[in-house]
Length: 357
Image 1 (cartoon, rainbow, N blue to C red):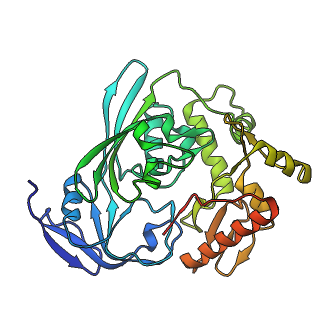
Image 2: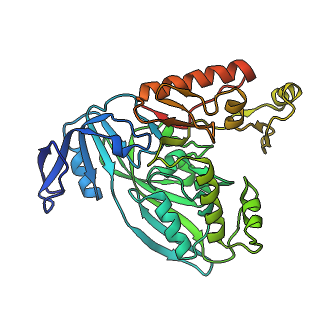
């Protein structure tokens, strides 16, 4: 039985007072809590640093409940009613070790990129290709984050989560998460129903399997005279490549890749290839063809195009940006205009990777 905590409402930032109060921040701006830098407000904001904090918060009468991690994969188009709970549950623990692998338990509120750097410092391999992906560890399974030929599911073991309605803990295996391309059961059937408190990953201690076949990693390594790369070399290459193409959210609001790379049939691709001989593509094991969304958007004339306070980034058309005073509604309109335009030109329907709220 959890001890009852008093609720202290505040109109400004406060800290926990010896766990005697839960501090609820009223009408609180989320501008610094979403990477688009959109000035939407939470009617009530609670920061939780433990499962106990979370369960106490879920007992409150504020409804509905909205879970906030790093705010890096969302487009806020409106103020958030009810209760926003920000995941600040930290901790990295080594729970199992063999001669070649380690299994880690990571708090859902840990910063993903900082976890990657921590792993590399300990010579734990498997997530170096996922360097510089913004967001929290707890959000990573929802999206099944991926980059440069690696996805979270490749190292994922299980996760622990709290059911928002019942406040009961549940463990999800890899199979139960139903991972897909930038997808999971938490984006579909169980959307908004669970708060992820811990994620368990298995990384390698030695004999690391380096993935260098995607993007410009090999070229970057060669240009820097690296012929026997380490996991740190791979991470450094990914960071350099991403930094050269993607704007820093601290300087220009964005949420990274806004759209998923579409998969089309071989027949459709061959038809497009006749019309667009230089179309970029990747063959998939299921017989379909993946076409980069960024290429489609660029070929359709959106790259670098600015509309009001938003636009498609000049270096990477896949990234929609906030030039300073954009609203979520403006960015959403741009996204839907791009979807309609690409559909008309190529017959391909783009879908948002970002969660539009």
